[in-house]
Length: 169
Image (cartoon, rainbow, N blue to C red; front, side, top):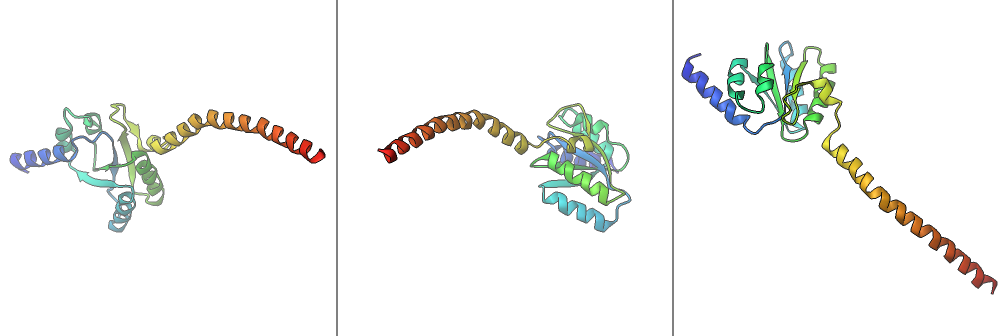
């Protein structure tokens, strides 16, 4: 590949991954075309994209970006998986697919721009943003529900007593 072509591809990759802060690296070699298409289809449902990249060009494209540590881990035949939504959900899908497709190899992942890389399996065990927000909502509303329950309970007893007095009298 000529130097101008390499430069053109590097610039294209740099533009595609500009602003991306999380991605998974997987190896698709050995998978049948039908298996790859099934995997891509299930990932597409999670708003994820799979792109096979040339390691050296991806490393150059990732230089001086958030993805630089992930670029350093690119070895062997690799594909990058990115998503516009939850990468944790994508990692869960990849782990399930790895059980179904023996030739799918899960490698490294970068989450939320953290330079410390995780394995895809570790990422899949993390909680999603929606899970955390649901727990937070429950914690915030819990004291209010407790207060409302306490306030209603004495009122109910007083109303029951007044009703009994009225019925007797």
